[in-house]
Amino acid sequence: MENRNLWAPWRINYIQGLAKPENCFLCEYLNKPDDENNLVLWRTEKSVVVLNKFPYNNGHLLIAPTRHMGELENADESEMLELIKLVQQAKKLLSLSLNPHGFNVGMNFGRCAGAGLPEHLHIHIVPRWSGDTNFMSTCSETKVISQSLSELYNLLKDNSRKHNLPCL
Image (cartoon, rainbow, N blue to C red; front, side, top):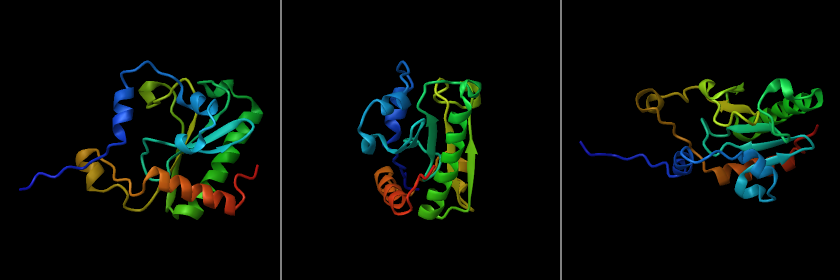
């Protein structure tokens, strides 16, 4: 039997970053105007929406307040309202752009709960398709992402403009 390799070169930055002291990449993105390279989809008064560079599935977005805080109880009402409105708008954009069959939307608090960045509150929105959990994830804990992040970013930016999103 021939040995086959599945290449995922974008994962090396994540793997190498695990050993480094943590900087808040969301705050770094907020302080840099390089939205395309940082995959910042939208900036609003109180929030930011970015493509996850290490996605669970194609179209995986992170929605975060601009204010650095780790706990939901530290968010004020206007921040919470804007975050949930952005979930609504992001879901609409992903539906128009990728036609998923469903979504997972969630938050993780603390490393033991799966938070990769526990000190900056963020919401995950993950598009799902029937059958997207296949033998790859079942047998080898591997996901197959079928579109490059830059291609997806451009598609979402184009559809965002076309449909005037976000409209808060």
